[in-house]
Image 1 (cartoon, one colour):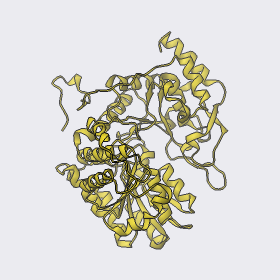
Image 2 (image 1 turned 120 degrees about the vertical axis):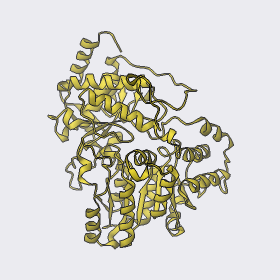
Image 3 (image 1 turned 135 degrees about the horizontal axis):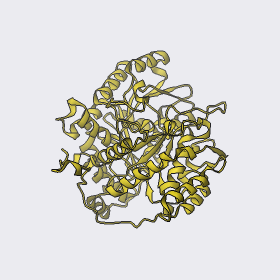
Image 4 (image 1 turned 90 degrees about the vertical axis):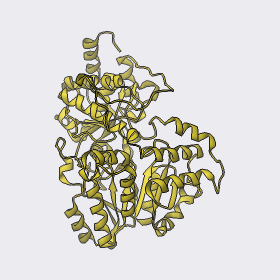
Length: 482
């Protein structure tokens, strides 16, 4: 339940926590920001954090931990095997999901690797509402193919649809029949679809997907990394969930899914990853890959203090006052930008605000990476580091041609319990200035393009000198301000 202000003009998201530890930030002059982004190859991943004022690259592993999480780290049992820390993690997973069988991994993409190694064979397909970058890379690396079956409404930038991450159920049935159940490695549901704006999936849709999987004898897999945001949206947008306890929703999903995995860098605000299932058959099929790629079965490559924080964070993910903070701050930022006329994905989802770069810079073609161009422009404008979620984040087709993204987005992640409201308002202000000067933004071209996950460490350069012109306009408008 949200807090209503007496004076309507004062209505803002209210933090249900207080800040007890702070980290000093610096905001470089605009000329130095230009130098930094160019030295980073126009790739926000390659910026040094000391040169960033607001780090909105991701919410993965950078959320503010609670005092209880920090305190729990002091009791970690640092043993190779038979660790009591792992027993506490298992107990937390049991409390949240009701599952007994737990495999640890050092983070979510490591869990994806284990899933792919166990179940993906050449010529097989994996069906999902929408792909995530590392998920797709693990599947295609092993000769599999990813088929996206998100409802077409999910690709409409602005709509009133509350669950734009939903599967197209008719398309799911048709795909299983087309390829045959034996060719489907698994069906993956991504809660809070990352690459289309952090859009949630309804409880009704998730359960229907699981039912179809069971009908055809196909494994159902839930990527629960963003589940706590998704559960928040279920509670506030889905009538059947309004009076359900959060744990009731977690348990209902776990009872229907064959396998659940998640990154604890997102779910629970700590580090690490988990694979869990009711049926021991599934964890037995994946078990051998944990010591092979990760570590022993009681730590899976995780540092034990992070595991203690994970156990506490998982329990805190049942608390609506904790899980509401991200979506409510994101909604505030999205609404501010929308009022300014900036094209954003609506309704607001999880993860962060998503700028619709196809509308911001419509004249920049996909192969000049408009979302990354906007990302670099925003860093120049305000020292704000976002993440490109467009064509640059795709991977080339086997024949070397570009796969153009359905949406060209710049994600401005809002790590939980990190930013103040004044910083959020600063972000909206600098985005507005950038948008008003969007005619200056130009394209980018490759200098160094890796073959796999190029958005992590590839380097680009500006086409022309538009970034220098943007700096000159900043000085003209802001004078000697930072």
